[in-house]
Image (tube, rainbow, N blue to C red; front, side):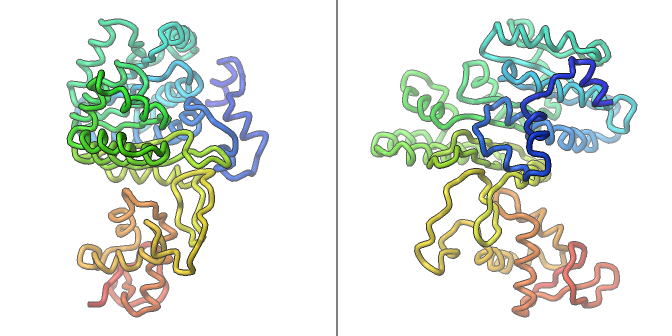
Length: 394
């Protein structure tokens, strides 16, 4: 079905599709060896994540008579290929167990009004447009924005894609989203925009409302530091702290340009759902570079760390030197859980992959700190698998 739809839409290859054909068999992270736009990042990553997130959302509404969900991209105009793939995914679900077409309302916005109007024409010309149960809403006037605002007030599960440092409507929607209980935010932005906004915030209260209790520290650090890199790091950390204070978990990924010290773009995924964070993280791990010990950096094209001392691992935020000890410190919470369950509970907001937990538990087994138990019989086994239970020794 996908191939036929692609042919009906004109048969043109997107940048992502063309790149995959050109480097068939290459590692996913090779996609980012060249500079990528926000639109290309969304096409590459977001379109992989959306079906997984949507399926989880619908599973969570099992038994609900009229399940409802929202998808919105407020910087959609430059990303027509990603928009088409999302809508195609919704349409293709007709007749399946998870019927996204009967559930999802989509909203599309952009600060560039002519480009948004062009996107609307493109979408309305799709061969399956009339088959969408809820036609896409384009946020180009007060009436459509009112419809969007009313939909958000229903607190349906919502995946919102936006650059929080782009234009006023995206900023106001971002602040509104941070007060919602059922919001998931895919934030893609450049650090330079974040710094520019914070710099002029004395005349614009968006940054003050966004950073909240972090704002005085942000002002103070910005005034003291002359380093652009340090300012960006501090702002990013303060932003994540402000988001976490509202009850969300935050997943971070950094896109560097080869040879550069500062990221070209940041991706923050903001959600109260640990499983949603893990699903996106496992996609991002396909693109991430690794430390020498195999722990993901949650970044791509980052300059290698200069290892000045042999015991470097103890100075890293995440490492296979630290992970076994972290698990021991929380042994009571993880006792008699499987590797899979330990991974699900511990990995959120860390860089660790499932392979890292396997390596850490093997190390603890060698040290006599854990025993492995058959999940059905409770008898001791000697080979670690994702299913066997982990008994921590006191």
